[in-house]
Amino acid sequence: MIKTLIMDYSEKIILSFLVFCAFMLLGWLLSLTVRRLGRNKTMQRNRVYRLIAGSINTLIVGAGAISALGTLGVNITALVAGLGLTGFALGLALKDAISNLVGGLMIVVYAPFDLEDTIDLGGTKGKVVDINLRYVTLRTESELVLIPNGNFITSVIRKAF
Image (cartoon, rainbow, N blue to C red; front, side, top):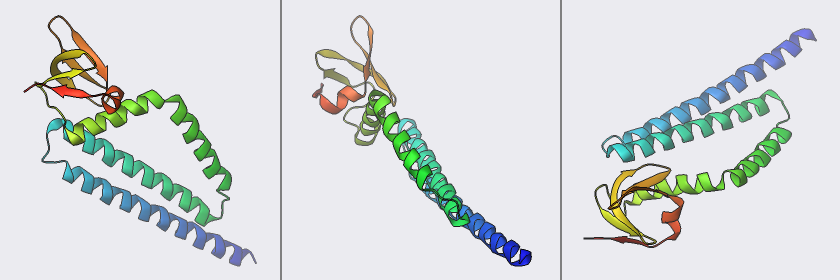
């Protein structure tokens, strides 16, 4: 009886370890693929590709850990529900930060303007001196203005030629 119990659990442990390793390999491969896609891009776009690659790897390894626990026989229903509620609460708490991050990704991916372009956003006109995932820095005639990227999602951008 003890021998069959040990055999049953050892099979589950080995199988769950293999499931986790498979997810880790998949995450690594997808992350590597995304990083290679961004290799020949500008430094700004390369950063976005690296951020996306890291996020993909983290999500896949997390899903692998949950799958491995389920394969091991752990009841993961409460864990998945808790993760969903935590994600919902964090989404509400970080709404503006997430909006700026998504706006920054859209600016880098769609490139409606580049560094050194002169743009006008809601009455603020200036030369773009920096673009990052949180805000765009404009140099006006008298000051530097940091505009959150969330504003670029919903506002009209005028670009001088």
